[in-house]
Image (cartoon, each protein chain N blue to C red):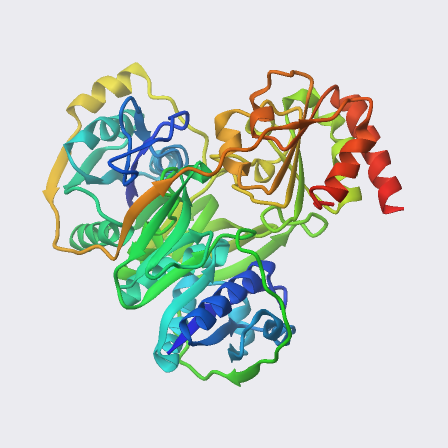
Length: 315
Length: 246
């Protein structure tokens, strides 16, 4: 029996979410006395690194045609790997590729799926976030084959040393009607869902021309930038930066909110962050109730001082 | 083009989240239910825009009991031509997906649209399951959708960018922010919705594969540590040495 982990890649290397899923799968395999096998579709140059995350075996379909993402095709290939490896549990990262592929595999295998897991299973029960991060649900998977997708930044990694045996997996690759025409990467920006630190700002900044200091602070911290919904809606910032209940949900190690009051819908998208810092002129801003650290003060004075202090710290 | 938009019922975004029956059920007491925002704002509105531009029809499909009729009427008021409710208490995502797939198999559609996830269970499951059950291509997290004859050109969100894909119909899509702008139903739409067909059909036999055993709330924050605005260096110091976040 084995635990099979789908480790996705982008631009020729495995994603951060893939390593997290690999580690989750390896910890589960260890707990259940099973083999941790990863499956990689398409070209990836850093497969060896999976060993440090506890993976012992990798099935690699080293076909450049699979560099482009198609969940229908991927689910068909993974289903073949499930049979070959006699996999009892299949793990996905809960990112764009896992979100599309895991449900397709679940329907193919008639298997129970829990998406967005935040902890290892206890028996057949898996904890996941619900109500956009406002609560947890413990969900029992009732089928023999189980599928779990792991929420990014939510399970502590255990990195050690280890090596992997890579096997070229020969499988049937179905033809589908989907073609990828173009991939547009915002290459200079750090992906919001993968970032360890996020600096976010809202209407308190008074206008889009004032975002320079937010971007500078983010750059000094190696952080991604985000914004609140009103700011995206009035066009000060692009929609893909909107975090909150109807935007993107994120769980970075550190979330710094500048000039955001903290409406319940915004909190829903960020309250999984490990440490929250709130900077607001209004001491009554509801965000302070969800914060670990707070400064009641003017962003235009506080943020430049933060930039200077970070520069000093980083020397 | 015949488009089916699958809509789900969800608690309003400002709802207080509490549980009942030994934390095994969501406490619906005093909760206002709405059409799941992703289903309504993006999937339904884009379907209507495509119909307005190219002709065809838009049917909204819901799986649930009669208490869902109010939100189905809302979708009709926004502009869907007709509605179908598969009459059954809902179970898990696979159960719901089997109901929808069965209906689409019997009634055909060129496109089946979903919101990217519901705001209550955040599963993001049903769309992909329906696509697999129907053996159709699936494009999730779509932020832009254009049709040219039977060819759909779609932008989807990926980590740190967007991907442009093309597929022929029939296709299953899940819609994310950017695909359309929310519409507010006007009085004429609300009046018309009362007489539009809402067909109630029987459910198909299916079992669930998962079951929620209990809910819990995240631990409350222990309290905010305030730093004086004149002493910003102390904040950076705390983040570095105490929180070990930078």
